[in-house]
Length: 398
Image 1 (cartoon, rainbow, N blue to C red):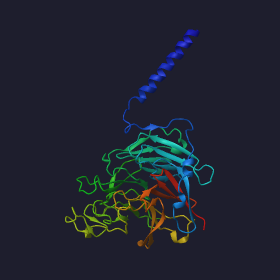
Image 2 (cartoon, rainbow, N blue to C red):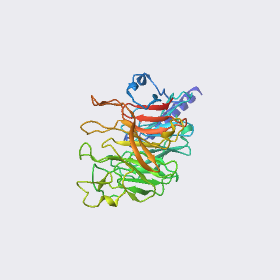
Image 3 (cartoon, one colour):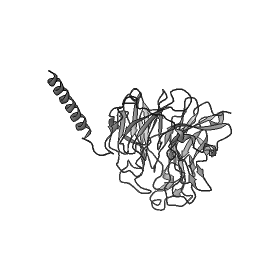
Image 4 (tube, helix red, strand yellow):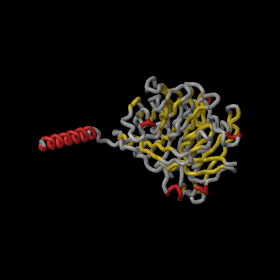
């Protein structure tokens, strides 16, 4: 009897091991395998001593504003917030998606989860109806009922897998529009080129289940941030200007596309008036929609949001806040800051710096690079930083 029990126990253990290793041995590529975090309560502290050593005193803000660290997230890129306060963060240089949460209301995240790993540039994250959407280079994934499964998200559903696999400008920002559709950009696969595939240099959109994918706007070199105006519901987006035309040409752009089918000039025209030296003779700038605001050259504008909170002074209401990631090949670096485009009746009337100090202009050394911005329900604003691996909170004390 004793022997039979031990035999059965050994047999069950062996079968369990075989099933486990058999299932996990099917996928060998780190970029194709999705590893769902399955440990019970696997959260870790969202803040460590590293944040205490940051030179936050070098950040210059308008009078009355303050900056603090909200969370530490390696290579923090695009952000999406659930109605209950869970913040999801994507990666570009790594392969993970994170979640953090402030559970005690002190405006500092205290818990952090790794939602998934083994992904291919999972830069974009979006949240809708309890589900988390993640953009890889060529695929859109959906983690169902994510907030009830932060420690065990399970294997996501692939809702779309037909985007190009080209990694040059292949990382994606994603967001749901007022129409309920998921908007997904596809960057140009080059610095400057004409592509035979219309999907390149575009913003696409699809239904939440991945069906009905269509091109919404074209002639967009590489947008890594967009939002919708709180009043008009029109789409607004940043675009990164082409390289190798000089330190100050062409400008980066802030654009708006209130209707489908608009073309914004790439690769023929830049900044509304500048003919491209290689392709500009093929089509005149008058064929295209000009930017709402030309931004400084090579600043790499990424995330953009309209300030919809009530904490900041009234003059900030519905103004466009932009994370300028910063240049990589300019003689003197530009960007590495958060800017603001002032708007009146849908037209730009000013362009100014809101927060700066991540770049030391004298030494040309940068300790941070802003990527995305997000307005919290209390009216404060989050800024992600992929170089510093941080998420900051900017608040107004008056």
